[in-house]
Image 1 (cartoon, helix red, strand yellow):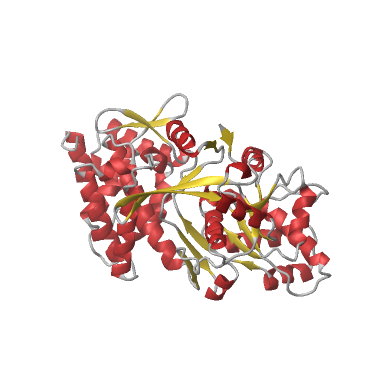
Image 2 (image 1 turned 45 degrees about the vertical axis):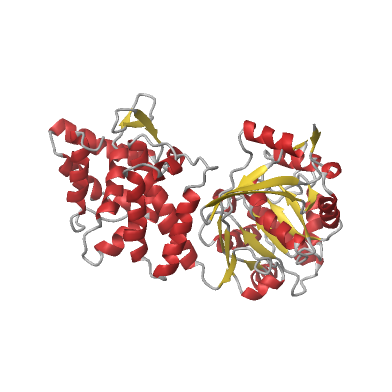
Length: 497
């Protein structure tokens, strides 16, 4: 069977590829992974298909160790298949598309000057990245004649080359669209770039140009991109299509890109004109808040409770006779009412979230979501709790149940190898992955309670009063400790099994 390349494309697909290859590089992309290829690159393809964008993308990997995808992409002439599948308005959909927006695919660590050449081009307008949250961090490194390791360091160097080539003239800056899952990601990238500029003595004039003539736009991305499917599904598709695709990618239908920038920018990158769910806004806060409090909050509520009840995946939990209705009641009845946004809009968003959770093609493991649940609880659910507590109201029952599940899930013991584990309500052992110091404190409280004969209520109050765990005192909140202790005692008696 043939491998995907120009020769196996349909006539219309070949025309799209040829048009991209002959188009100027207007977007430099740092990151070749599943997410960007199923999100930003697909969006660029939609714009090109509709005749709205005449640029192409040059793509490189962010780290020297990540050459695998670049090599595979280059072997396929930069093209790959994206299958979008899931639920839309309750009905299953499956769409296959060829993405052919890459005109240059290369390893910047072996072709450093090729990257510099693209950065100097007058055609270049945008830089899109997904280098993980850690990729935006400032890590000191020397300026050498060779490739620069860090992403912000690369950008500082490339911008300085661009600035120098223009002999300090105004204008000529770039627009950065970081997709890393970090709040205020554009600000973080700009600040790291300026630190490298200072380290390397690029000068005040350059730093002023970076700030005044380049745009580092904060953005929020939201789409589940599931990557290469299981082998059986991949082989079935290959047999149907008549070619193999090593870079085959899959994604859910839902997508949102909220970008903190003026709507006029859509004239340069016409996502909205193409009908995509992209929002240019002067404030990302409401978009971040609803995603964190509703989607991520529901995940964090579900994971410990589901695992305690022997449930392994998100969709399975939605179908659970007891927990499925309760998570919906938590979101619609207890989380949504605390948000300072339109109730109708938040309920519509929540409905979309549950449709996504029910996607039959996605097996989202609760054990993965449960990693680092303590810090996730602080950012995703605790603000909702606080909105009730700070008004002197009791924490609603379903939210309290979620905290009960978290404390019961974190009732852990440490073995001789230093690993932490707990026991489900059915008596099955599971591993817990989180900050070791926090796990030690929690295990110590439960151990002390058992050794001294203290009650569950005592242990709960002691845990909720530990500000190192929660960032604040929770034990004094109206009725919370009592509700949690009663739920834990009920499980202890076996009523929750």
